[in-house]
Amino acid sequence: MITEHQEIARHQVTEQLRAAERRGLRKQERDAQRTARGVNAPRRELAGVLRRLADRLEPQPRPRRAGLSLVR
View 1: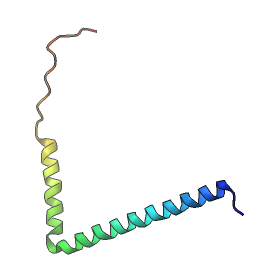
View 2: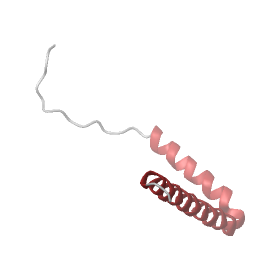
View 3: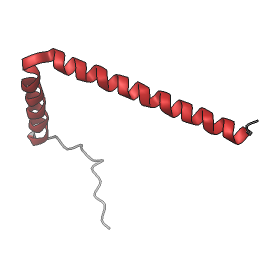
View 4: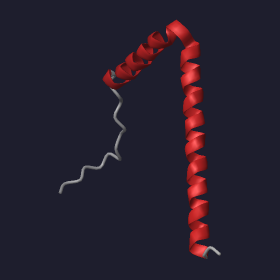
């Protein structure tokens, strides 16, 4: 006879195993998609990195304030 605490622990472990399996399957699908892209995959990844870098270097407009000057 198992106690209620043991039963709860067993269910938690079962859920953790299911979550780990789901993560593994998602990773496996992502890896399969990356290999399916073929030769263009490195070029696409480089283009994404360059886009993000350009976004960071581009000057961003500053939000306007209320117009009141606060002196501390």
